[in-house]
Image 1 (tube, rainbow, N blue to C red):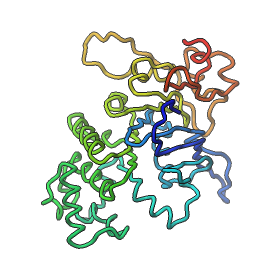
Image 2 (image 1 turned 45 degrees about the vertical axis):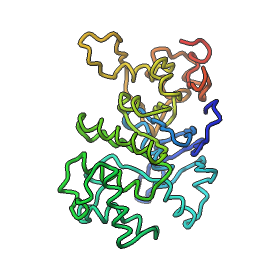
Image 3 (image 1 turned 120 degrees about the vertical axis):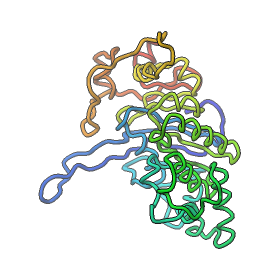
Length: 330
């Protein structure tokens, strides 16, 4: 999904993750929650893809399905040319060293009974990389890189603030020196003053270690700051995909325009007009036919409710799933 001949480290094609709806005494499947419903994108090595959308759009499910923390229903995920969904347990174990995740909740994602040294160093022992003195050295190095003192190694999670705990989560994710890191809303649970520190830390670590990020968030202001590319999701599908500067400067999909218009401005007399979407987000267990956004779109026409449109290129490195944008350039 890019015109550039970049070194693509991750290719996602037609990814679907559906959860069964079971009812009755025999737990019969009566329907499906289509959390992710046909998502495709590429992530170049050393770059950051921002995955954004309203709560419940399926962005977190995409990240966890890529790592096989959640089983996929359909589609493929290629990491450095290897189809993740076809790997056996031994091959998957080796690949997991290169694919890590930073969780959203800095409180619930750390084991309260484990010391910092064990939390950060657990993966080193599990993969047989280091133990004893060498493990301690790597743990200390990761703590320092994440902005914490190595002397905290024998402390427990409850002794840290929310921002410090998220730094521990970052240190744990980077202990194996991975190539790809899924950042699952890593700053949404933090104070605004701490959010910028964590985002800047992630950028510094990316430059230092050559990391590739998928940055999942609902805050478009944060995504704009850190991302090279942005994919906008709605009801399990990608509505728009573009370079960060292109998407924020010239958003083409009506849904993207509405999201960007909701970004707070420090000016008491904002220049842009807020776009208020009508109606509620449909249920992913019964998504609308055609374009999933047509029930709330101010530009919807009859065809939008009948014919599904895939992502179509509207300019260089800019793709949109909207009939009227592609044909008329609304």
